[in-house]
Amino acid sequence: MVAAAHAQGMGYRHSIGIGFERVGLDAPDAIGNRYLLRYAYHLPNDRIVLAANLGYVNALNRRYLPLTKDVYVTGKRRERLTMDLTGSFDFIKHSRHALRLGAGPSLWRRQDELMGPSRYTVLPDGSATNLQINWFTEREINYGFNVLMEYEYAITEKVVVSGNVKFVDLGKAGQSSIYGGGVGYRLQ
Image (cartoon, rainbow, N blue to C red; front, side, top):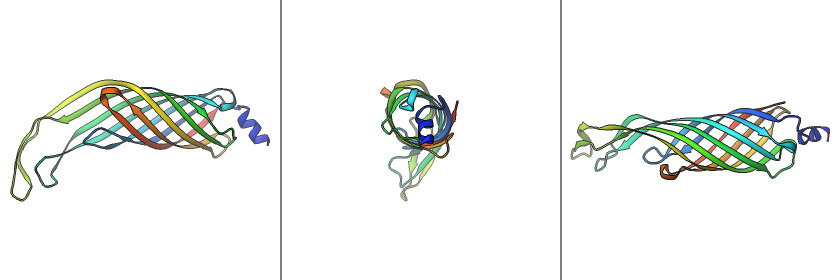
């Protein structure tokens, strides 16, 4: 009972953490890895948490050549620098467990090296020859919103692990489904 009273009585106001997520990207990549740094401010009784996540995605730009038999061209990288702010509410009032649902704004910087109009010859066996690939760079800032569901478990009074599922809508840049987890540390 004393441990529960301490955790619910807010022996901490801040937490920091690191995380790893799988991010659904627009075609052709389908999915990439996002590495995160997280800072969270915990309001009294730890029922409401305001969090900022800074992330980095670096995915391989792999393109299928139409009319060929499974011929792909591996090109330059696709990068995202991401920032998500989320306010969330904990539905479980427990010293070790938290189940949060939240939402907030997202701002992602996108830099992609994409394959433009290209020429190649398809051979009878479905392979390709005489490749002339044109790459172009696309850079833009995308903003939108994120929705989060997160489960957090306190291993000790200070160390926590979490798993989450997110949805991000970045307007014309599209929508992304995200899942992952992390490790955090509670500060005073």
